[in-house]
Length: 328
Image (cartoon, rainbow, N blue to C red; front, side, top):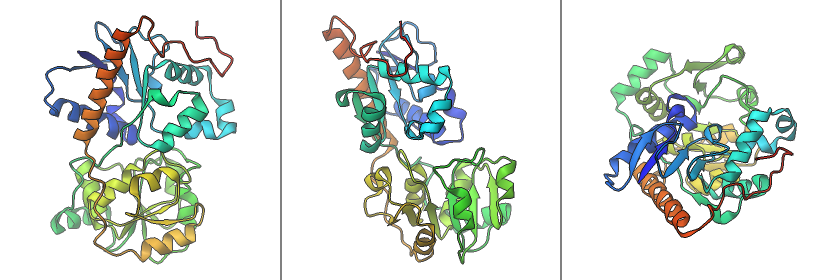
């Protein structure tokens, strides 16, 4: 079986980039000789096309298409949804035409059913995992990143993109919340982030540096009101660092009792919980990228097997459009 895999987001510093890089590596490390992965976003002479992001979904795919949805937060904010252009709405229609949709949590699966009208049977939940580079780093490595980024001995940590303000993440509110420990924000920035008062910005860092920054942190804080999976949380746990988070369905599903949870929006309690954290942190879920790759390969096989058994490709144009745009 030949599978076309859209690897364009591999260079993205956000979670979609981590997903693409880690899954591609794991797909090749499984050693399966029955599946050949071809990196392209223009599927030709293949049995399956896999787009690891909504932006890569094709409205009229020449072969059965699998799409990974990481979250549907934009569709939950009605005002933002109304401003979306035709291109993004067509991507949603393309996802509706996918034969199978992969999501990281049952929480996102529920959103996909409610927001996109997908049949639950067409959705596969395949969790994400910490990259193999995420593990407890040595004192020497921690000292190196402390010197490189002027980090204090003890600090709270936030990890994500700071290129654009994200209403879900509540970064500005988190920064404004009183705390005893310094707050370090890790991720690519734009000028607006440099106006945040009383924080340390590292900018974009390498995976090895990130693992050392995680290891050296007192705790990771997640102030988000909505998440699809919460990859920084499992990365932090893999590096031995406690996690304090707001109670949202996906994070509770992924972390269980491995994190300290507070009510969404209660950032004062979030900071207090993070500052009370003690090591050792619980171990992350045992799920690995190799596990994710094997489950993803099973989806490919199921898609091909199902299409071979049906006279009409299930999923191609069988979902009624909800945006007023015609598929044909």
